Amino acid sequence: AIDTKERTRLEDCADFFEDLIESTAAKQNMAENLEKVMSVGGNVEGLNVNLVTPDRRYVFEGPIKIFAEENGSKPFADFLFLFNDLLLCTRAKSVKDKKFILQDEEHDIIGMHEVTFGDIIEPTLFSIIVQSTETNSKPVKYFLQAPDKECVNNWTTHFRNVIREVFKNRKVFGVPLKILIKRETENDI
Image (cartoon, rainbow, N blue to C red):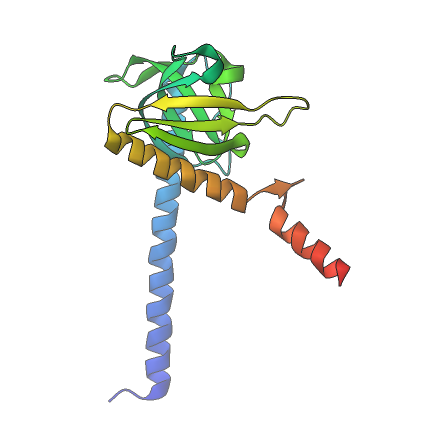
């Protein structure tokens, strides 16, 4: 029979090993994410920005046409990469070889902090709205045309999750917004 002291020590050891396994898995996920972000950055021609940043996570990618409302139905990109903080709009040079082209770095990299989800217009068409943080800028509506309904479901789910995460984790001068709001509320009391 095991006494309570021994049992407690064994439970502590089991907890330690469980934490160690979780930590190892988390580090493995970080390494895989870093590898994916570096791979995307290396396969996009015309990208002069280093995609590797400490908080950036790869989320989703796929063939989907995107066009601005003001430009009519002519897509400016046909393959998108979604990260937790930005949307990278590219043209596929060779999907099979994972080679892509970024035509206009200023317009083809969209910060997710500027994005709100629009509407699902048709089974394969939905919209997002981008409000630039520059003064006097007007919101731009983008339409995204997917090959099928399942693709729309995948993209809309990922967009909504990223937008929710960006909103939840907003920072002002590196301080999470919810902490600043909490401090302000405490000061009002």
